[in-house]
Length: 247
Image (tube, rainbow, N blue to C red):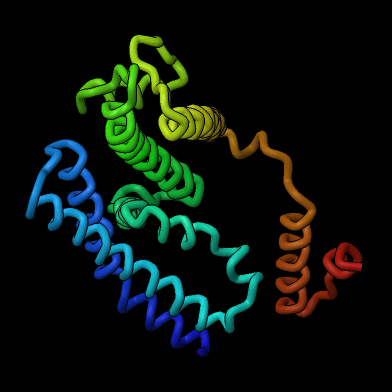
């Protein structure tokens, strides 16, 4: 299919898939926190299964539209991850938050705002999802000490923050794998926050000091062209500075 067809598919499937991701998250949260039995558990599993099928279909359609090239798979690992964890698609909501009025005053401000929103949203989502997964596997494990939702969220938060008080800890392989992922994510979040704050401080410090900034060669060439153009309009030959600079 053409790129136009791919764009139409993306536009048509965006909101349905977003709603499906939230449905998956609600169903999974219900199954872990409330521990439903009987028909309720069947309903929760059915919702998770159906929404997962939706994301598999979405991925296959995109793969077919790309011509089935392996390069597309390598370049779209995020889509593959979304198939494994459909609720991650909810992160796309953060994109609309970055379009709020007052947050796009400059390119630097827009970029920092987008990074901050994505970073904060991803951190909250990781804490919540990590807590759910750990609670699901740890409370049934022999010797497990994370057996309530509150304990799981507390553990996920201090792990993401790389504090790790040690009052709660996973004993299963899955739980420890989640812990490693949260710790690595926490390091990345701290790095993003530090870089964003540094960029903001540098920009604020440079306000009102444009005269102190050195001119670039591109700016000098632009000024030279304007001078030559003005000279030609006045019927006077320019000094050829712009042509010399371009040469």
